[in-house]
Image (cartoon, rainbow, N blue to C red; front, top):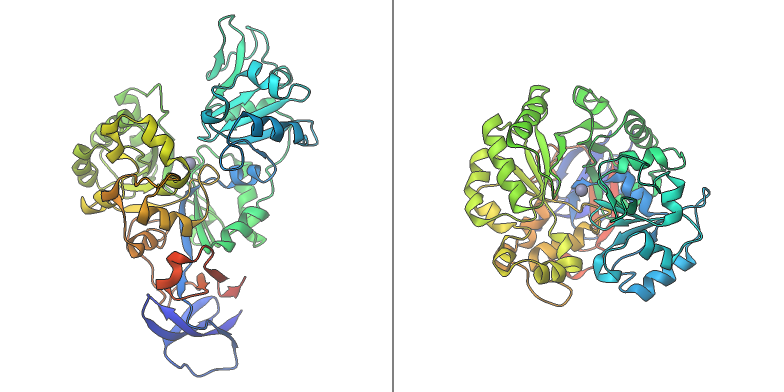
Length: 468
Ligand SMILES: [Zn+2]
């Protein structure tokens, strides 16, 4: 196994020291360590940190974005851009064109007829930037057998006045996949490389209901060194034990992901029963929750079912002030994404009732209320770059320069720590570089104090002590 001596590392923003690594573990941290024949790496005073953890992203959706047409900001901002992008798009080997990142600000609500005017000669499917909606043109509807009123009696398939599917398909990815040309899970190699480039050595995949094949392919990618050393899967089925749960290499099952759709909420008792079932299987819950109504329902159901340590709320995009104490009392963690604010903040501030703007992607007031807060990207639906998300969490600036929720700003240290907690304790105490820890480390180009002014501060990454 590798041995390495990191020279002149800045630790915790102050101390300068050397870091000895052997067999994938940090073994010594002290000034002027003597060399024991191992390789040396001169950090030149740059900060050395534990590898960052992105507590909520979607690995396969990220892989999908790598071969998709960008149909939303910042690449595409109006109908002219969208038309140009779709016209130029190369179909995949099945003849399909896949678009991602669409927002209504570009060309309104898209249905099959509207999409046909943009590109009709190939099946086209475009995903809304929220990930909740696919929009299909007529060729795509024909290809999946969903053209006539009798076709595809599928929940989520929106219908026009004539009763025929209109091309808009809500939260039905699993069903859509059964109708698309078959292809195996996409390669995760480029996703893994992007994670390492940003200094991310641990991730939590928040995709619900992962199947055996998808989980096995993630394990394979880890074994081949294509993914970070720690991967937690919120979408692992209840009852499934993964290698990581047993301390073996490979993914671990985390809390159990549950969706609370933005419309059509479940009944209180049904939700409480689902939470009880997850808890009975030994899994805390991780509940997607973006509206005020969903949060009220979730907190009531959690109180009813009884919380389990590790229960978490994903996004918590709107938290009314009067619910802060309930969140704290239930002991739930919040995994949120102020990194959305630079791109979408102006849309949020324009579309929300003025009274709700203070409730948007809360961070500081949650912490003050005693709620553990972790940051994450929700990539590919939000930008992956944790350093940009940290800057967003400290300034909360929108593209036009407004500050979205000034009292929710975190300090740089708080925002960084929100990426440094371990995957199984989001919002918990940040890991620090010390003897005994796994040598998953990030080496920055500069001391910590200079990071906020540097767009790409990562110089190198160590995974289990190996330089990457
Ligand atoms: Zn997500």
